[in-house]
Length: 239
Image 1 (spheres, rainbow, N blue to C red):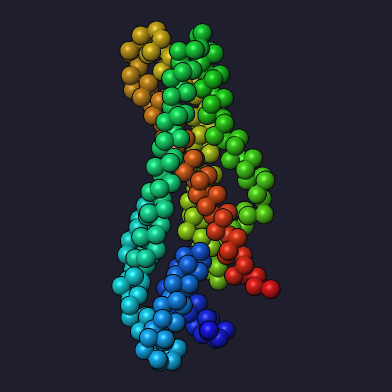
Image 2 (spheres, rainbow, N blue to C red):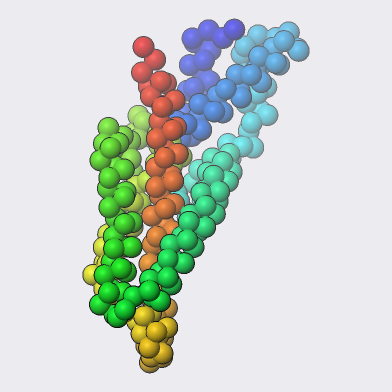
């Protein structure tokens, strides 16, 4: 059984290594279990067991780069966990995005003319603006935890998903720019066999797909963020 002082010592040690709070709490559980095992097996006090545990975790707290998502260096263990979860979310996002891309092709062949296709193009991509805004509206209490610059004690992200969720506005802004375009070139290419604007065809197919995938990614991150915040808030407000 750990005293409050012992638990605080572990927490302070992990804060020193700049772990996002959700990862910090996860690692803290593992460290506490490991310290308890070492104390039992070697019959030593907390301080000695804690020191041994720090040595075992030393390589995990080395600083490394993960430039895709972090401007600054982060601990190796954070990179491992964040990379694994981001890769999982990205795979799901690509699959969902392919469903939307299939719908794009369906609209190309269902539309009667370029005007109708443009309307369908805008409705489809507008969906990727409206839905995130609705989700945010129903979760407005969480918005304070989404801001990239809002950190625990000015140092730690609240969750590993926080920097992903903060990308949502930039992706929505990019999607808004896509919607004002007609997107007619794909229709002209496939339905009227107009091959003169092949570059625009690729742009109107691939750019919306990319942005859709990224919006799906940040929204999946948002739900992961929301789930993680429940435990984080229990840590922040223990009473």
